[in-house]
Length: 539
Image 1 (cartoon, rainbow, N blue to C red):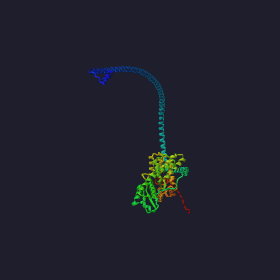
Image 2: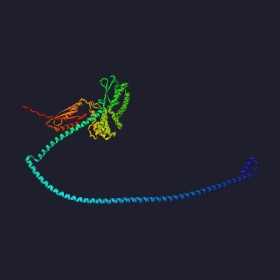
Image 3: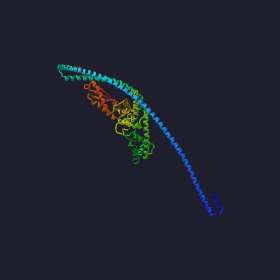
Image 4: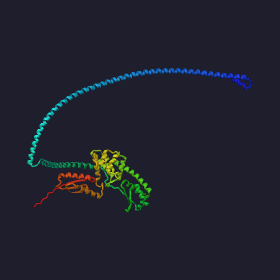
């Protein structure tokens, strides 16, 4: 480095140095640089070799430690293996000892059973030998009995022949005469006993039934006013009819298309008549007309808007009516669709009686009677409330309201007892529970009370004529009269064709035929009257 500095100093001071001296100096400098480079490389190699030796020593020590650890693990595993083998051997020996004990006990039991079977076999052999002896004795007795029977038969034939000669009747004739007399006497006695038993049972049953029904009716506060569906809308003036019809009839067509109800606008002053089978639609149409008349704006767009608004209000009102009926009766857990159908009954009538109030009344009566008898009150109320649910859809679907109601109850997973009560409340199906009988009785009570239902004069007369015709078809009937508005029929029989015993059976037959062929609310009493008069003149 000093030489380089010196050379640069000379060059800086512009000293005239010969070219040879400068070349020598530069060569010396280059040699010194090469020597320094080789010395540095040697020093680095030595340090690397030293570090490699240290790493090899560490790795050898790590390998030795690992080998010693493996040896220790092997020794420990062998110890655990030996210990586990000893434990398994001990468990196996204990299990073997227990199994040996069980086998010894089973062997002892088998030996005991073999002894018992041997004793039973000996007893059976004894019984078999005794039975053989008894069979032989019975065979001998049977032979003796046959001989005795032959003798008795022969003597009986002789006696019968003697009796036929004395009575001047054959055996078959005497048997027929005797059987007829016995049958007549038996029939007469049975009729008398049946009449006495029925009279006693009726007295007790009527007393108890009157007590239960009177308590139920007394505790059931029901509205006794019958209803009919309103189908007439009053108008403030006859000018409103023209506005309802509209230009070229567009308003009335819009109302009929939106509601599905036919409007009859005739010469009747200040009245519009609504005609339709669906009571809910008819009610929607009635409310729509009332709102349109009070509002005064009557055109197709307003009509459609009002009908849609009234329909939503009606759906909500129907749902609230169903929930109200459920809360009034005190039952819960009814399917929401059944609740809606129950609310639709508010706009359904039967013989002028509102079906919604009728269902609530039947549920309350059935529940009170079930409570008096100690039965399932909830079942009776539930079945009574849903017994006429089929009437909510009978104008939309085919089938009787009984069949439709049972199908709806089955669809919405009501219990089998409720379904049976719905199907049996008019006697179409045999009731399976007492609660079903109570529902049918409550339905009859609700429909038969005064003022509950109305029927037209034509239907009333036809029902009375049919009632008298049914009673007059029986043999021995002289005259029959339907009285008390068809609640009772009196049948007068011919005394020479029907005796006192047969009147009881005749009354039962007439009642069964009336039940099978006639539709009527409540019940009909059948009275059969037989009167015999003997007349003679004193001369």
